[in-house]
Length: 255
Image (cartoon, rainbow, N blue to C red):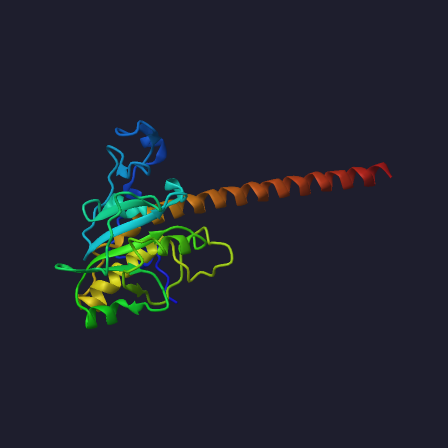
């Protein structure tokens, strides 16, 4: 199964384009007044002065997010940050503003749910048999909450499309689920890319690689924290080893 990496994304904005945390510091969000660094995950807007990349997607995107999924841990919100004019986010299951998509068929094309249901078809097959996709709807929740989300009245009549097989790069795999279960932003990226390449039959040159920009920024921070923890453990182990050797030498001398 394919796995996307920083090195495989020719259009990804370099991570070092961001000011360091020390340079930025946390600022008060203009909307909610909470302190944030790069973007406000509650208001879903970048912080002032942060050079966040922007992308244009081949179709619109709706994210239906479970209300108990923490905004701070949601990768789907990254799409709203980099494609704000094409992305909407709804908090379900009590989202009063979530429209009823009905059958998904519309004048501008189809609205489809990206979900591997029993009746799901590939994006390539769907566009070949049904026509243009105008909007992807993705569910942002844990795999244990999927049942509740797919039964929402607004979503249950939508046609489902499934992705090809991929392997997640996510640093926080879900319990009892293998690495074919993607983070939401990964699923969004692959759906958009499959639609452009296989549905629209257009070549892809990294135009929306930056959908994964904040995903890999976060991964870099997680990796750095893991490395720092590993170093501390090594240093602690070496210290204990040294102290143990000193004790042994002392005991030998005493004898």
